[in-house]
Each structure stands twice: as C-alpha cells, then as structure tokens.
Length: 120
Image (cartoon, rainbow, N blue to C red; front, top):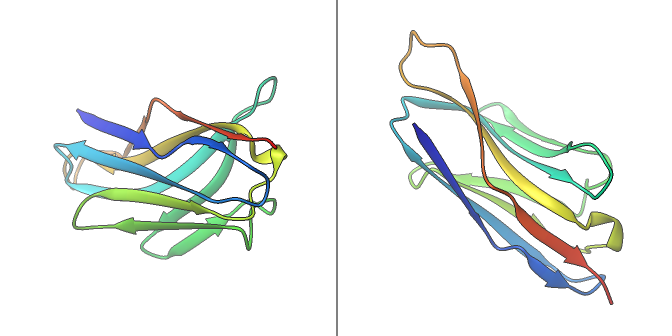
C-alpha cells in the first residue's frame, strides 16, 4: 500500500504564504500524476493543481499565486501558496495516481488532509 503524509497547513493572514508538503511512501513502481485538491466547508472537493511528467495544471482561481512542484528522488509533493486569500480556506488533500508494476492499472490514493485557514 501507499502512505501519504501531508504537512504545512495552518493559520495565515490574507496576503501571506504557506508551503504544503506530501511525503509518499510504499511499494510504488511509478507515479503517473500527483496533485492537490481542496474542500471548503459546505462545498465539493475541487482540483487545485496537478503535476505529471508532461507539466503542470492549475485551477483558474490559483493561477499566478500557487506553485506545484515535486522532488522525484524523495517522492515528495509540494504546494507553494502565495498571496493567500480568505477564499483559499479549506482542507487541502494530496492525491497520487500510482502503479505497483508496469502491467497494473493506476490507483488513486489520498492523504488525510491538512487545514489551511486564511483570516485576519
């Protein structure tokens, strides 16, 4: 199995920054994609950003403010969040699509979530 451990959430003032991390461990043959999602109270979970070997993808609401990156050697995913606004308040989840072997279908795994609160 795969374990995803997130860290870096917290309380920050509007205009501030936070950096989320997601450490991935387990019997992984390959990571097809990695991403961050978020869920605000009373709302559906939404995509924030994804990263593959082909590049990155961002939700319009975070373009120019958030940066997704990964350390392949460490199997760690990051989300640098700048110019945070109250509407960014949510639980942020790390998600990976991984394979146990070349012939296996990819599997989705999720982290436990980390709270990000943006408030004066």
